[in-house]
Figure (cartoon, rainbow, N blue to C red):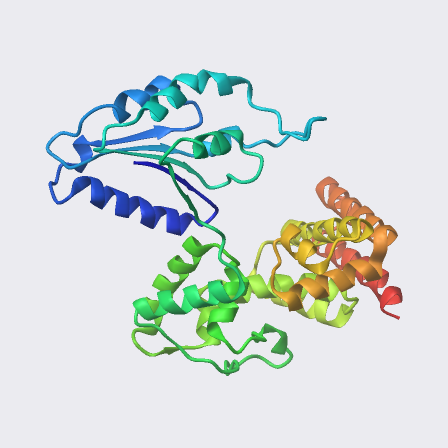
Length: 361
């Protein structure tokens, strides 16, 4: 069997590997004597052919896995005049491999080529698909309802009961912005970790130990799964880009109290947020749709995506350039030690919120 296993869902790929290992072992206990794992980055044709043509030892199958093979051939350069992606220089070196595979492998061999970042314009993937009998499994990124269904299924498998409902956590006066806006624990976890299924199951493992059989709420997700910290960062950058100086300063005080990141971390957060606006502004100029923009900035949830687009529209190219100029100047001032770090951040927040307020009016 020749299997092409590719796609960004790393958890699904790990689980598929385990299924293949079980199949190769067949209860013999001899898997390690019949397993070959090759690094696709620098593997040669003969490195693959030799183990693939070998008979298994006291087991039903020999398993050969070529890891991250397709990344090596992923076309990243410009498309040529003929409309085709340029082939990597060493593509011809794998001609013996194609010939061997087309002639046929022993029926006891399971040969797997993998790639997390393979996709369009991958000549090796396209070439291997042409081999008779090859099996193709694309592990697509989970999004929207499929992602929520995955989270609920994985939670149920760990006996976690996700209980919908608003946050009921006690907060200090004036810190309502710390409260999660979502009432669905699965949706909050999906927003925190997007389509990273591996990170999601790790967080669910922690949540299972924390809740110990009781219902899990949005407050549990917020506290245990990194929600409070991430959302605090998002609230801070959103407040700045929306011109809300009072909220931005309240969150700054919170950061100082809990000692998160420091002033240089604040600048990095703001730079990252405005960098996303640069991408959106360019896409808006090109006439991109909201869905296309959401894909480009990896923000599929309509509410978050649309708010980011609205901020980019308000600031426009000139506003974004002015924001970056202020961020670069603050970074330089801080690194040279010309002004105290806390004061540098406060001045920068004043400048950035001032840019947003006229646009809002």
